[in-house]
Length: 315
Image (cartoon, rainbow, N blue to C red; front, side):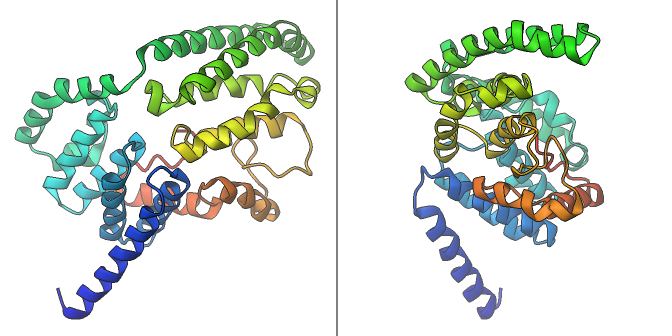
């Protein structure tokens, strides 16, 4: 490393450290730094992306599993065996299953038989570490609520006309959904948002609330439960309890259900037209999720280098 390069990396390190050091519990900063890694990936600066991930992993107590998955693949792509294995182990501690790990083509090609033996040998003990971080009582409760919600929502499909589906949603599903939201509010008041950090799955709760937000235009225009919940959800993002992408899905269902084109949405349920992209990027930026352009660029990189970047908005 030249003297000039050393100076550059020293300044770069302190810039990242300063941004992370502002608050180790403020996950808005966490997500801003993840966006920086994504831009580095688009720019093919893979070492810089890994460097930011490394600082995140050292700084925050809770790391979203997606970030361990991407970091391990970047390490493999840059031929760093030690970091690849280290990030896979951290991923397992965060709930990454062996089945899922093996589905990553890049990892399958890069790791040797001996590497896989080491991973398998440590797998059970690492998984038990993850299990101990979860609230089992809340996990069981939310999992049951999610299953019940899915079954209730499925029944709408047996109504073959749009009018019949709307009647079912407003008359049958809505009372059930109101009870579900009330239970979630109680859980949040006691334990915080039941997402990946608390119960191990990010999509259970977001699916329940998304179902509530898509009952019907008439219902959702008059609903006060969700509007009461919004500030709680935004606080959960800041605390690392809720992924901003999961919030975007939840809120986009609500905005779409209102059927009001004057309200900007996140472009998830309804992809934006070219002339409305800037309008869509504004609410995305407000909660710390990538622009439409960055998303499209990441899709291209994913196809080009064979890394699964989990960049679709639902993860």
